[in-house]
Length: 149
Length: 431
Image (cartoon, rainbow over all chains, first blue to last red; front, side):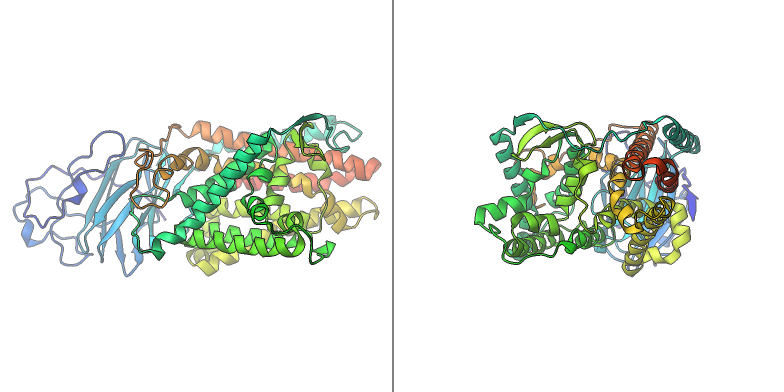
């Protein structure tokens, strides 16, 4: 039931053929160090697709985003709890079948999700506790982030 | 899946194993020390000692205004949707923090120390006084009704907070507060103001029970008095249903805590996934705690040699559950109070979540000023173990009063119950 968070070390990549889904890169940090640049995942043809699509051929060092949590038809597929040590970086890929807004409670991070575009939720977990992450539509709970410390 | 209560979304980390083991050991040692060395004649049973000064009138008026303003702001949440105003998604309204943190937690927690200030804060008493409702009793309420209506409403309220998916929704909160207000006004108009509040407004008995721990009270003339810790608790009127009310106090917090614990999710499986399933679980937890308490009372009754019935013992010892219920609530919710309670600073600037900034504080963010778990764990364990100790002391004193010579023997059942409840509390905290 529980999964450790895999902290992906993503190299900063060259600018990609954009479709405007750069929402991940800014305004994620409540109080401390700025986040690293999130990697443009490319325009996936379906929410579950993890392969790099043809529009991102210019990217050479991209690790294909493995979607951690998928939301479709209001149903959540993915682990129930992600564990991370205090001070470590949470680095998760989320995809939804509709436009939505993700809210990380406690850290009070609000970010927009575009339908079908994998999104990188990335921030430094500097407050201990168990924090619920939900989407705005129907207040659906996606998962908890357990920050141990 | 479970989103616990209508506010927040942050929960405490489970207790670490060493903290848990030390706490459990402390409970056992304290219990046996208490058994062997506590007093041999009752000391807390004669009730409050009264001698004091009157409450200042401006304080009472201020509290009444504050309480009434709170109610208006919550009910007022039904207005924006009516006039078509859009709420800003990133702004919380003032309703959840007012209801679930201030009204439900801060008021009774503070009352346990400073005395029953809810009497003055109670917005429904203020409202009834202002519009002249409930000056006389039109319908006589049978005595046996007691606290049962309050118990039922208490369960409904807990369901709304802990089970309903709409507990954080300001409009739903506004509608619920409006419905509750109408219900109480009708009740007060029929059975009289004080009887109506004591019977139907479950916040009234809830605050009365918890603030009976406080050393501050009032005499018959309404004057503030120093009465000594716990002394009002031993003379709480044993209205029918008192024991069930105390059981619900413990069970609702237990349910909320357990819902976040891994072992509970494993036991209950998919039941936790649906509103119906969680409704069932809430009722099941209440019934399990009630059964455990009543069984202990039945055993104590039989050990007493038949002078008391199980039902009588259940009523006589109900007050000993109150410190345990308070300990559960404080240990489970104090981080919610000190962290999510800060939302009030932002919410007063934008009470309806419409993007206002009345006092320039609308963008205030919660400050997590406790940055490690150890102090939180220690506080939680101290509350639980302290509540256990006070419960044991109260049960011991009541046993001496009621069972005299047989006190030690008949106390065994209560001790087993209290160790079980404290273990449950620790188990919940350990996730």
